[in-house]
Length: 290
Length: 330
Image (cartoon, rainbow over all chains, first blue to last red; front, top):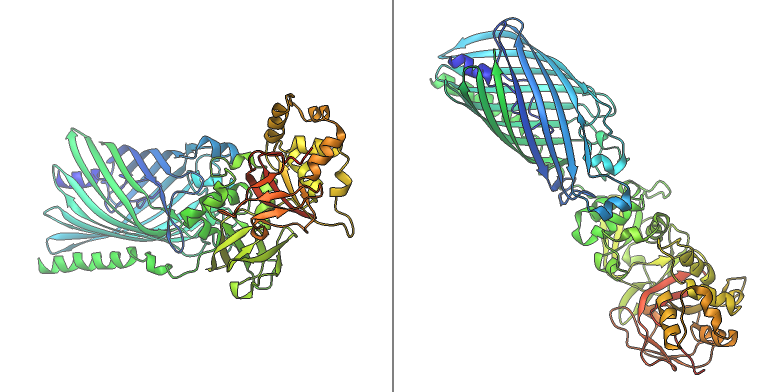
C-alpha cells in the first residue's frame, strides 16, 4: 500500500505555466495507472525583468492564470510508462477599459494549451541500504493543441503559452527509503522551435510517501540557453523569444480519501528569474487510480 | 543509515546546485534599456503607456540603428508633466496615436547628449526633425519650456534626462498647428475651431503662415470654450465656429492681433512678469512665472487668462493655449 500511495502521487500537482517537471520520479506498475484532474490558479503583479523586478505588469497591471489540467500516467510495463497531459488555460489581465480602448487590447486570452506526452523508462533499480535508487530516463514532446496567439505584440503578455513544440529529454534519480522518505532529482534539456530558446530543466524534490498521506517540497529551475531580455537589446515584441529562466519553490500534499480516489493541494512561488512574472500559484486536484 | 543520508544529501546538493542557477546576481549589474527605465520607474508610468500606445516601446528597447553610437537621448516627462495636460494612463486615448508617436519622437534624439554637452542658447535636433532650444532661467536649465529635473541617467541604449513638462511640436507653422488641432490630428476631439475660423474670417492666415524670411511669433491661442464664453459675455450665442462672423471683421482682427507678439516666439521659460506688446498695440500683462506658466491679461479683460497647454512649438513661433480671449480696448 505504501508503494501504491507513492505511485498515486503523480507529478502533476502542477502550477501549470510555471510548470513543474512534466514527469514524476516514480514508476507505475504494468497495467496500473492514474488519472488526475487539477485546477490551478496563479497570479502576479510583479515582473522579473533584467536588471530588476518591476511593479505592475505593463499594460495589464496584473496577470492571472486559471487552468484545468487532465493528466494521466499508465504503466505499459513495470519499466515503461507513458504520461499524457492536456491543459486548458484562461489568462486574465487587469487593464482598465480606458487603456483597452486606447490600445485595442483585450483583458483575456484562453484556450487549450499544449499537449504533453512523455515516455519513461526505468533503466535500473538498485538496492542501497534500506532504500532503493531508481534511475529513470524520459523523452517526450509538448506541442500546442490550439492555434492560440503568441505574436500580438504587448497583448501577448497575456498569451497562454509560448506556442512552441518542445522535445524534452530528462534523466531522473529517485532514492526511496522504506520508511517513506524519498528524494528525487531531475535534470533535462528541452529543445524548442518557433524561436523559443532551448532550456535546461532541473528539479529536486524531497518528501514523504506514507500510507495515509504524501507530501513533498520541491525546488525547480529552468534556464534558457539563449534568448533576449524583454525590453532589452534584440527584443522585437515577440515574447516567446525571451530568455526565460526561473527558480520555483513549491510543495504538495496528497491524501487518499476513498478506494482509488485521492485529493491533492499544492502551492508554488517563483523565487527569482528573468523575463517571467513573480507568480504565486495554488492547485487542487482529484486523482483516480486503477 | 549514515550512507543513506549521505546519498540523499548528495542528491539534494546536486539538484540544488542546478536548481539555484538563476538568481538576481546573474544580471542585477546589467544596465537597463530606456524602455526598461520607463517601465521600471513608477514616475514614468504615463510615459510607458504613451510609448506603448505610440508604438515606441520596442524601438526604445534596442540600440539606435541610425546612429553610430547605437544610442538615443530621451527627455522623459514625469507623470506630473503629463498631468499638466490632463493626461495619464487612463486618458491618453484623447490623443491621436500618430500625434503621440510624433510627440515622443520630439523628446528623442540620436546619440548620447550628455548634460556636459548641453549649453544654454544651444539647440538639439529631435527625431521629429524639429529642433529643441536650451534655455537658462534663474540658474536652471530648460529644454524649450520644460525644466530639466535630472540628467544623465545611463541606459544600455542611450541617455535619459527627466523633464517637468511634455514638449509639443506640430511640425507645421502657426496656422497649420491650429488647423491640426481643428482637424482632430492632435486630440481625438477638435479644438481651436473658433480660433481657426476667426483667423480665416479676419484674413490673418497669410500673416501667420511661415514663409522665407517671415517673422516668428508668440501666439496666445484661446480655446473653443474661451470663444463661447466671450460670445455669452457679449450677449451673443456662439454655438459653432461660423457664429464668430456675427462680429464685425475689424473687431475680430483687432482681437486676434491682441494675441500675437512679434518677439521671435518665446517659451514660458523665456517670458517674465510685466507687459509685452502684441501686434494690436495695447499691452498684455504677464503674471508671475509660477510652476512653469504665466497668466496673461488684455487691457479689456477683468481677469487674467491661464495657460492650459503652454509651449507648443510651431515652425514660425510658439503657441500657448489659454482659457480666455484677450481683449484690447475696443
